[in-house]
Amino acid sequence: MSTIEALMVDENKTVLCFDSLSAGESVRLRQLLLSTEGVKKVEAVDSSRQALIEFDSRKVSYQSLENIVSNAGFALD
Image 1 (tube, rainbow, N blue to C red):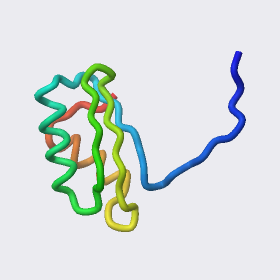
Image 2: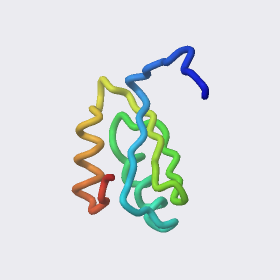
Image 3: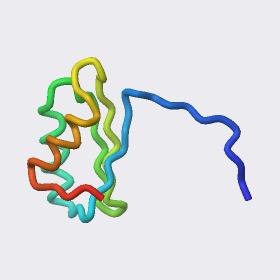
């Protein structure tokens, strides 16, 4: 069994998990988030139903990101 030796928290990165995420939805999600002020980078992976988001926490909050995604019709897991 592996043990965690060190853990870093970066308040400017997060991962959102989705109930489902097709290839087309990944593209739409990426476009949606990149059009949001403060979002710098989005890597949406439909096979794992996740999106890694790098953002400026001074401009947009994690809660705002969740709201934007949910209001656009994506179901968070």
